[in-house]
Image (cartoon, rainbow, N blue to C red):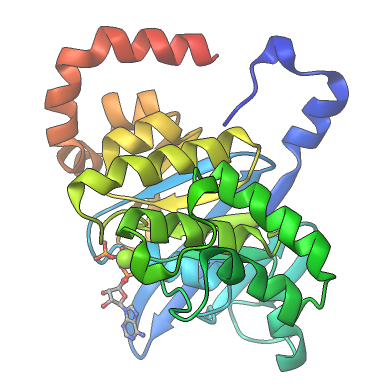
Length: 288
Ligand SMILES: Nc1ncnc2c1ncn2[C@@H]1O[C@H](COP(=O)(O)OP(=O)(O)OP(=O)(O)O)[C@@H](O)[C@H]1O
Ligand SMILES: [Mg+2]
């Protein structure tokens, strides 16, 4: 979430302006199907970008490119000043990643999916500690205190010793977020993190994600919950048929859309937002 100008020192401004993630002309093709057609996206330190778009527009495919679960056909991906992927459009002179590097590079991103695949035989705390202890071989004491802090940030201080089966879906998803955060990623990627939850549990996961945003985490979130997008996003990006068709501040993209397909996509939100407009705009102005 953005810091207001008055709070921002010159040094912090430089840090905040730094790109954590940059995608250049990302193309992705499966057989003869062009799923992504040249996506450019820059995400700054601490920025929260929400990706919206119709089903099949390429949102999940784009997130999967960022953590190399999909291999783009061409384009570049730069995370934290390291070029992690680069292939020219004509496929000449490009560089693919060495297989031995994939895990190190993948740990620059933390991914949270619809389905929270926690280890069923481990407590919440053990689930969060697992990656840093076994993959990164960090000392257990240090990992434990970091894991407890993350679980606390996720509102789970009372539940650290419970097993997944003793936790609600919303609590399990918050453990999954803490688990991804424990690897100290540069950017967190969320693919519809609340869509598999019972409606009454959606709010607690959204609230935990707002806390994460406030803590300064850089986040890219795919969601169909437009109210949540309005709440959490610094920038909303509308993906349409494999390309970014429109992007900007939530107030512009969600309340004053220009692209015809975005207009119809946000139509329902737009109607309900009409009632809330004075309130929403006042809050947007306050955020600066
Ligand atoms: N492994 C694959 N092989 C072939 N086609 C694929 C593959 N993965 C995705 N696609 C196609 O790419 C397009 C974009 O899919 P993607 O899952 O990225 O959309 P999405 O925007 O996340 O949609 P939703 O909102 O339904 O999750 C779809 O037409 C899908 O069928
Ligand atoms: Mg998807």
